[in-house]
Length: 152
Image 1 (cartoon, helix red, strand yellow):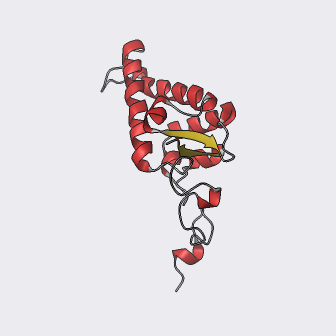
Image 2: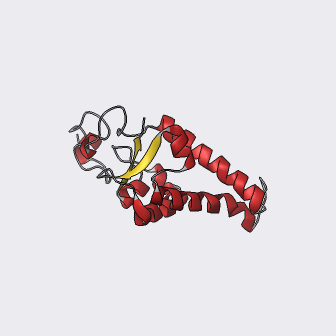
Image 3: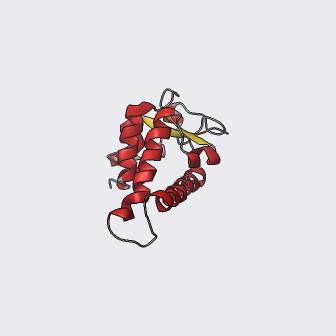
């Protein structure tokens, strides 16, 4: 009988048993600074960024929770601008900084404006961000050639 291990997935290739931990294929350490950031850091970072974006949108763009119309997209616009500017220049958003993670290229450098733009557009579409490979990289990070690593 053929099972999923024999076929692999369309994201990962056929053999997922070659590495012992997520990030090993990328040359990242298993633990500590430089290792992959887990969900316990990434989800709170996302929530911090979203709350800040919502507060800024409410203060300056007329956003109201539960409102309809064009202003309902104001937090997403602020979130996109934050990600585009901060990830593309310094490699982290405010939430990332608070949670001790950063977005880097696979070679360890800052993402840069092009990768930051690709990552931001796909992140705002949501679905690419929730489809992961075995190294816990979303499609948005794979397309941008980036990875989210721990800073501490």
